[in-house]
Length: 386
Ligand code: SAH
Ligand code: SF4
Image (cartoon, rainbow, N blue to C red; front, top):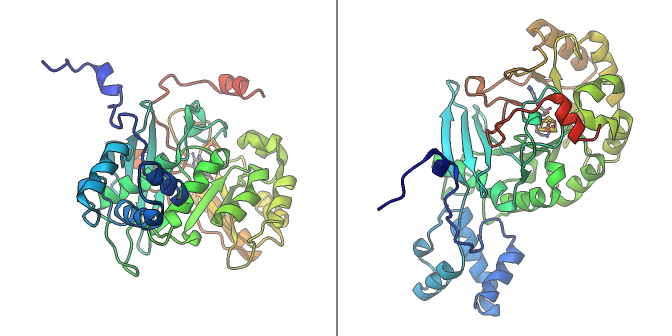
């Protein structure tokens, strides 16, 4: 007789992998070593990696039986030793504006969110790097969620695979218009606090025989983990966005507490030394517009003075509200007045259009229910040792 389905049962992840290693998330080198250890001849290993890689990342196949250019007994061997597994799609919500939010369950029963944002000239997938976040930016919903853990490489790449499954984007030829043309690491978590896994996942996403996204179509957003920013340029080579959000240390300390560790001056000095800084590869500064907090004309002037000499664009983000949020969104007039000053100083200052607000998918609204008990700011600050 089947076990009765209890609410508890529903929250326990299915033991899907049976403990076998997942080929998703292995770098080419580690896949090669794993295939050899499983009995693949060394002289065939590179070819086998290429074949399996193509099935996983170009065709989206997870069933070894469907890998038809491999001999039957080799497919059976792989099926005995490995799995090809993505995070489990728990729910999908589609916003009135076409934005899609996926709630994914990962090993251990934790949940993360991934958001797909279709636009006329591009489709952007916003992916998460951690369950929750250890940082506690006071305007960010994710920051009220306790960090459960870093995502693995497979769980980061897996978000792309799940979105491609949903969008039916497999088997595209080079030059085809892509539904997922851009990736932003702007979901839950601080990507530079999970550096190695984020790097390996992005290198997999860039692999020309797989998902094949150009490094210039991947943007990593950081709250300002200064020592890792240069490494991101060197080891990933993607575009960088910096969550600046304030023009004085006093205000930034409040909004982005990591500022107490690396303040505005230290952050900007690191950016001036950033290896890939050119006019064609500008840094994006993100600036959330909070009414009466950081949105004055003086702030706008201070901002352009601060970043003078850094090839940059300023992305103005109207604050997205969430239940219990302690701030309000600046008015449209204020945002435009601010943008005009920044623009007049020679910096592009696009206003980010809030997307998917009706399904809580907009920037800073993500928070999974893994940690149900909502923590107070004081508890969060105590844990962070502040
Ligand atoms: N942890 C990284 C990336 C995730 S947040 C970082 O902080 O940069 C992605 C962007 O959304 C950041 O610029 C963040 O500051 C911004 N954000 C967070 N909460 C927001 C909110 N409620 N409204 C608008 N933007 C928000
Ligand atoms: Fe973490 Fe970024 Fe949110 Fe700050 S804004 S709490 S760094 S996810």
